[in-house]
Length: 299
Image (cartoon, rainbow, N blue to C red; front, side):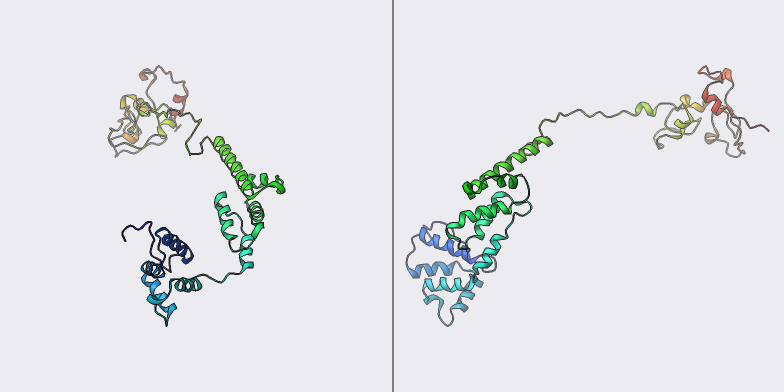
């Protein structure tokens, strides 16, 4: 249609609300200045889906849809789609309404207004909206603050505005305590550099005690084995066992684990170190390490 103002969607009875569609249809006809009953009927029929048009034919039967007045068609749909309402049922839903978890104050207030449409409260509407809003709020500072106010000079709009201010102040205080702003950006937190430890020095360190030898990193196949102890975490010239005598071959310079002569019997009770004059670090045999590793089993 050329020169049409606005847009009116197709009415689908299984997916749309007839009451909302009827209100939009009324405004569409007024905006485009469509006044005759024939033109209004044509607009209504052309904006019905196949299911809706088939339903309208069944409701109008034995009459003809194309010959029925527009107002009759609207009343037919209203009678079919709009349920019969009970004032007490609507009031019960209104009086039992409470703020749901995670529901904003504005959404709760809008839901209360929608529930009060068919309650016929008349002039007492504002007072009842205020009371239900205050009493239906979830436990928190907003409810406590409103309970402190005098009900004689508090309107529904004022109650909503006061609750919004308290909620905003609470969120700002919580954001300040956690170091984040209301937009979620961090504030007041100093960034510190992250330092990574270098273990290359520890890898090349020769073990100094029996515990150091036992607690080592997993073997790395890329590095050669030490000829004195068989480990890969240090060099042979820095090995602690480079002056010890092997239990298999009785040669000085390695232990039985690194011995290449596997056929000899091992003497588990005999561990000797080099003579004192061969020790390069100046130990005279009285240090703690020499006392630990120089063990003799009397025959």
